[in-house]
Image (cartoon, rainbow, N blue to C red; front, top):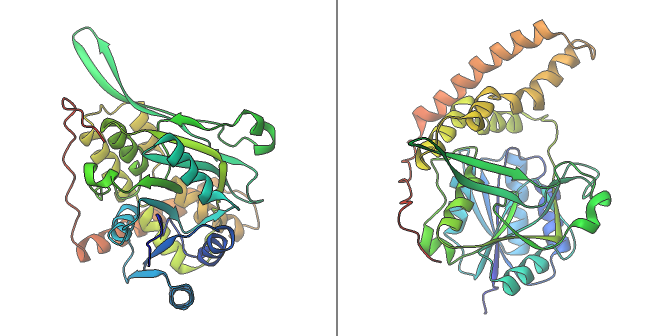
Length: 344
């Protein structure tokens, strides 16, 4: 039997409770042939059983880990099963639209792009508010006297804009980065640049990968006729909360930022300081502050939030330390040789 030219690799982003809706949308709205690899990184029993049932029903490859995985660990695990011309990485909280995959492949075929990103929306109602429509990400050299400083330039297009207001301004175009919410990649890219960097545990992994591909001579496009939506939501189950806490733990973010900075020979400028100042922000916004307000009947009590955050940080450190002691650390990827450009 002929192998489809596309393999979809689904992996956990930060929670498990949107697994059904996301997977069902893929099978409902994808009409061209594809293979699918689902990486299940420690989902709870009900989700794990659902995935086993659907894998039997649909015939996709289910790869199960009983422990939580970092996003790049999960993607690399799925990548081992890819034999097709293209691989599509998609998170388990993404809802796709009719024709999404056909349009990504068409863009890749017509532009010979190494990476193609869809128009990514955010939240509910679905497919109405833009999260990302391409963007800029590059290393900029700043010269001050005899000193040369390397810094990251990053810009997102049309963030939080209603799709209805800017749809006439959206068109296929080259860009400098895509996000792993959904991203099509030519599989041959990995023969040149190697697997995804697993030392990036929770952040900057998409920027790192796109910089690596661009450094190797690859190109990136955004195809806005392909629309997907990632759906963040309140965390209500312990499985979601425990994975979310590890995924966005202070330790994982700090380790990722330090590795990214060292790998690309960057100074600790305001780009990094902003992210260090926001450590824990996702956890606190997603479940801690809503929980405190629920306890105070909807009233915001700043002093109580500060106490709750201090307690939560202690718990988060304990959970992360337990995980680190149980599992072997990831060896960092070597710094790229900036003096020797490669070609894809």
